[in-house]
Length: 277
Image (cartoon, one colour):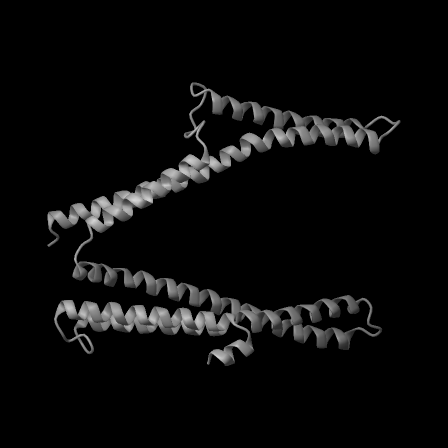
């Protein structure tokens, strides 16, 4: 059963994370607000200059069509209204409250840095025991397994789509070549299909989705095997609970490091891979 002290510690650390996530959301929103606040008037001015430039360069000495006048006027009116609306929100809290008005992004980022520093200091003071951290690590492992399998499915689907597109493109080249004589209008299709085959072949060799999918699935299966062994208390987890958790955390971290090394190796050119090996 979880002790009250441990529960309070968890709640405090969770609250710090919530505060940091809230500040990150406020920073994103404030950036969008500032972008609209200063970007919309600039677009309004550019629309007026475009209106004048179109009249002087495209319809110099002639009457500009009414539809073009109407389009420019509509764009300018919308931008002017949006600018006035945003300035009213920014400088009149009674009109509308969108949060953090008159607050700079730099101040919010400073608050975020201070919150993260406060969380780190409090985490050091409220850090649970090693056994509790190892038990918490074990509870997070299924999410890591799901992530690895999701990425594995993503790369496997990518590889299958590339291969099927490669198959159809190769077969289409032979069919179009046999069907059209003279080559027009099949010449353009042949050029496009040849380009597609070249791009897919190069992308498959560079990104290596099949190898990535295999490595991710293998790591996920191995981690899941260790989770099952720990739950059942079978080898190699046949010691005391504390020793089993320590061995489990060490083993899983080593497997994650090996997985990252394999990903980095796949990112290297072929010659670099041979040197690494």
